[in-house]
Image (cartoon, rainbow, N blue to C red; front, side, top):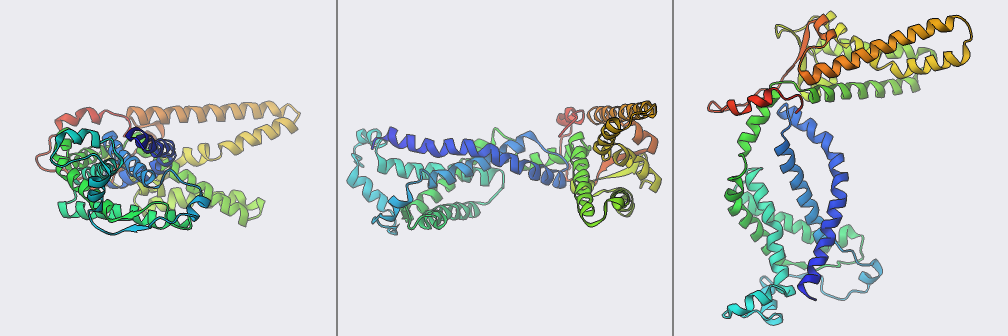
Length: 396
């Protein structure tokens, strides 16, 4: 088979990874952002690019060692060896099956288009990025990088030996000890090439410091994540109560949930709801001291009077509009119009305040604000001047 044909086989796994990666990214994005908020208080676009490119790289590796998949019936009739345990047997194959001659440089270029040579080079190049990622971002030592490269290769070979997690009756690819050697060599080469790559990127320490620096300010996105978590927890608890209690007690169950999540928990945890705990922020007064109990009530008032009941109020109005036919209907019109106006004003004011970094009206009334609870780790010689622009950004 020609080299171009083999390259086309390598494209199939990469194309599959390009299809699967967006789905995987959607699944991992929210947990990853929460992890960043809990550890640093902010997310950096460059860090996201590095981490998700690493995930995409591993996904490509997985598909490269497992695809294309042959028919199960065909594999059941295979009689080829399952394992090759002789070290450096691939070098012997190169000398016997290719035009490569050690002392004849004119054969080198031609041999690059032959399968035996391509396979060895591919196994080396496949794990070079792995060594770079481990050395640059995860800051692994040489020994640890070499060990992890070996373990990654071993996992690939065991995957093949198991017949893709025993889906196949026997291995459809060879467990080759030379693959362990060449993959580990690739990781070691990647470790050595890391300084070249790192020259164009900030160090991991600088990335962490930038994250801590941005995390000193509670961004709009961080507050929205906390709010979303609180809303989800509230809805889950309400659904549970709606199954356990008769309909006439649902309203009282709702009041208990609101009292628990938005008053008792913040009072006991010094201004933290469950969502704020997750992203490491809390409410304080304008003097950065613990807020009073009534300030929590004022702060969360729009949440349990406007946001959470909104679908039920809209549904109730529709039912009343369909059933009631009297002059009182105009009173309902006026009441619903007033509620809707207040609701829209709250949403507009909340969005405007978050993205302009200003206190909204109900925070001004309650005299509270959100602060980060993460212990900032910045080195003494850290230069803050290049990050002044980030202070004015609205989102992480």
